[in-house]
Image (tube, rainbow, N blue to C red):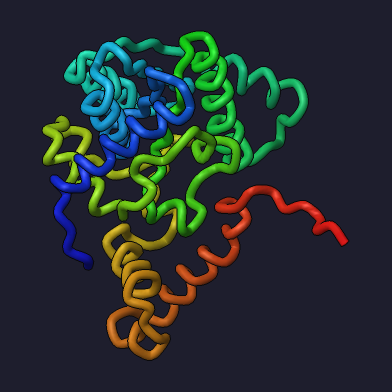
Length: 255
């Protein structure tokens, strides 16, 4: 895995956040706090960039969300000293599915939850005149492990150049709670859901494969000496099938 100075990266991200705010003409930020590693690190970096008085956290639980998620999000908000608010998205999500789509599977419901959360964040961003700081990391963005116009919607991605395993290390540097750092990563979209089980690969494996593919640009036979062909093919398929999520919607070319 690549070796980078994460303390330098903290400073780089802080400057990046400040420049994004300046160029957009804003002075405040809003972050959706899930209690997970990415949103916690993002919030901590935002506080470093603009001060706790200029960062607003929003907890957006669904009634089936694990209680620990909300507890961890509240702990992070209190440690950082940021203003925060709780909005239960259950009524908005359930009213749609109960009335129109009672047979929807867990994936559709999970995507709806992610988009509902972003709807609330964008509304509150207008209310408080803030920019939305995204919480996506390079690992998840590259394989499309995000909901289009859901958790992938934001003004900018402070962690978008860091692999997931690097985000964990940065969390330690920033002094975030052990409960956030040590728990299994999950989007908390349904009971028992974890990111690694859903993707079928660990973040350690995913990051190393992505690093060798993208950074080192290794050929297929070099990759298969370290990983199974099945996992390499899986990652390649995930990258290819999610390309549309990383691009603006295409338009016809003028003839």
